Length: 91
Image (tube, rainbow, N blue to C red):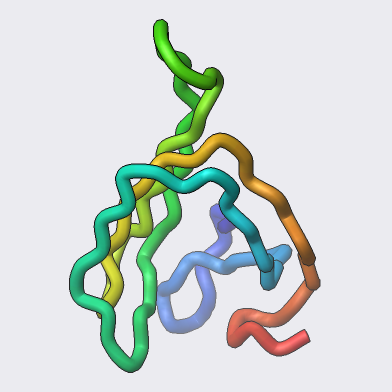
């Protein structure tokens, strides 16, 4: 997102990218609200460490807009594909 504002008063976004990700060794998976759309507002990923067990690990939080609300932890995140696209997700 930039500091520029479009004629409708929305911030101008650039560098849209459609990303396919794979999460490895998922644990503590919790999901609610799964439906026909599953639009997310945001995706928060945080790297953490622990005293016991495999470390570092990641906590993942799908912040819901409409539908899926999910959280889990995993040991590795793999980016399978990253394709530049427009604001509607079209390559």
